[in-house]
Image (tube, rainbow, N blue to C red; front, top):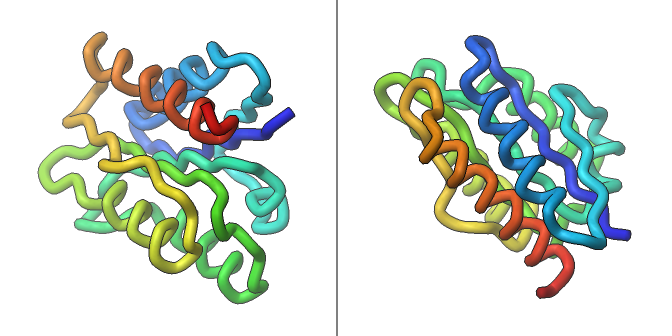
Length: 146
């Protein structure tokens, strides 16, 4: 069974709502096990077949927690190459954090990324949550090679 991690940081709850919907979408595909979490160790991150990272944009950047995790993965030289990666998040005025995350997953860690990243302004509405579920399903299907 393939393992998918939906990892997120959320201060206001908006990105957390998105993360729950991404996990829900991934769980609609048989053959995957989905873990939803807001904190993992670098070693745990590397144990998954796919990783969807959710982070809001604060001051034109991703959250410190996500950035620190990526730095630790790099320092420890943990292997993420060819795993599936995706990014999503909410924003208020600029929205570049999910793009930065996806760039790191693709270029630094050489993951197979789902593009473009999914961004939602402010709180996700029903349309935004539906897009999150679609993203989760797409991640699961790509992980399984469907």
